[in-house]
Amino acid sequence: MRRPVPLNALIGGSLIGLLVLTAAVALVWTPYDPLAVNLRARMVPPGAAYPLGTDEFGRDVLSRLMAGAASSTIVSLATVAFAVVAGGTLGLVAGFLRGWTDRALMAVNDALLAFPGILLALGFLVVFGASKWGIVIALGLAYAPSVARVVRGTVLSIREREYVEASRVIGNPEHVTLWRHVAPNCIAPVAVLATSMFGWVLLSESALSFLGLGVPPPAPTWGNMLAGSRPFMESAVWLGIAPGLCIALSLLGINLLGDWLRDRLDPRMAVHA
Amino acid sequence: MLGYLARRLVMTLPTLLLVGVTVFVMMRLVPGDPVLVMLGDTATEADIADMRAALGLDQPLPVQFALWLSRVAVGDLGASITNGQPVFWLILERFEVSASIVLVAVAAAALIAVPLGLVAAWKQNSTADLAIVAGATILVSVPSFWLGLLLLLLFGLKLGWLPVVGFVPFSENFALALSFLVLPIVTLIMIEVGVLTRMSRAAAIEVLRLEYVTHARAKGLPEWRVLLRHVLPNAFAPTWTLIGLILGNLLGGIAVLETVFTLPGLGRLLVDGIFARDYPVVQGCLLFIALIYVIVNLIVDLMYPLFDPRVTAE
Image (cartoon, rainbow over all chains, first blue to last red):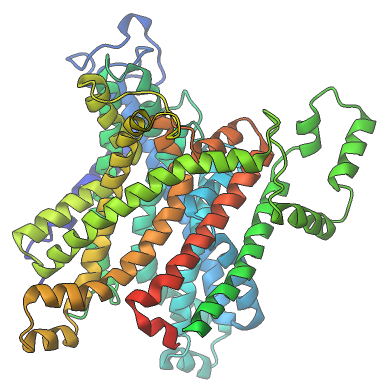
């Protein structure tokens, strides 16, 4: 069944490695200042001085893409971390305590799950405002309920196992049983979910930026670069190609990596083979 | 069977109530005083107090919620702050545009994706399977708004086959209306084919391993009959659920495509409402889209027994 070389892991890993590397480099160095306006070098096609050309303000596209990679990666990682911590805690507590705590927490959770994710994010964005951290909170809150549901389900199936009983019998306090014996078993399903979520968040963040509801300009993001390229779609094709390709390749990387991870880690998904 | 339908219908009521509570709380969390937003900077103290009383904002929160719910339940979503039109009619008008795109695109995508997924699963690990999986994974990874821009660049600007900007209602000029909708629909089909192919392939692989399939083959049934009569119905069930989720998600998510193709759809109404701080419009869109999402999922669940009769036996 398993291919000798897991092609999806190889390609996905390389693409995501490249993304993270680019983001890290961009934090300390970019070929030009991504915000520097140079009116004498407007709309320069890709060439020796500007490998990916310049935009309508003479800003270097490559530098802006690199800065965009950093911003997308940071926003996506922060959002996923927020969703995992918030949703994970909720799911752990609800599943472990059960009873009315569980019912109350899950009622709130189900209310949020009754909305399509992107709609919930748009709603929260109205509350928290369109800024870098506004997006992190809005998208994090929108995705946390799915984490809560997965974690609660896992906890419910684990809490009845013998080794959890054993931990109680030897006199461990409940919080030790919860953190030492129950929580670690949620890591595999959460890792699978978090990987896909990184992709969804990256896409949602780009879409929000594209709509003008993301990180405010002039700070470059792939989404707002793409939106900015629309008036020049015909005259300066490179402006619209490069940011979209960056988003697509990052998503491809994360999807391939997610497929591989799911096959490896999630026993329920690793079809009865 | 009837028990299942009744249970599922009754379960919808608390969900709808929770949706209402969520939107109500969300709109109360919005920073700034809604009365000041509606009245503008020139309002006097007395104006503000009158408006507050008129809107019931001087009442305790549970009373406010009950008042609010009684209005919303009969479709009174207030008037838009920007143009004074009733939000309910604005939404219905925009919904028509979004719904026609989404329904046509998702239906077409399902018709393409389900057979593709079935063939890929049937020939698992063959070259054809690899090609289908690779193609689907690439389609899933392309952002819809970028694909839309590329198609617009190619067919609108370079080849000049289709109009680039604008929209005409079907009632005015059918052919012209269609020409504006071809590209958004094609874009959406391509994206959703990726998602649905992956799902239907995964589901079909699981079903193909079950013993009843081996049994059907052992009986000597022709392979096409095994696939269509025995594998397809069971493998389609999870895809069917996914279709419901996609339909709901698209009503909000289609805002980006409506922006690319400058279409006056529901997603665009919501986003413009957010920009203009037109809270009645935002609130109306949130409620309406969530309601449609709940209804679509309800319909999906009610039709589910057609593919998988086991769910009614619970």
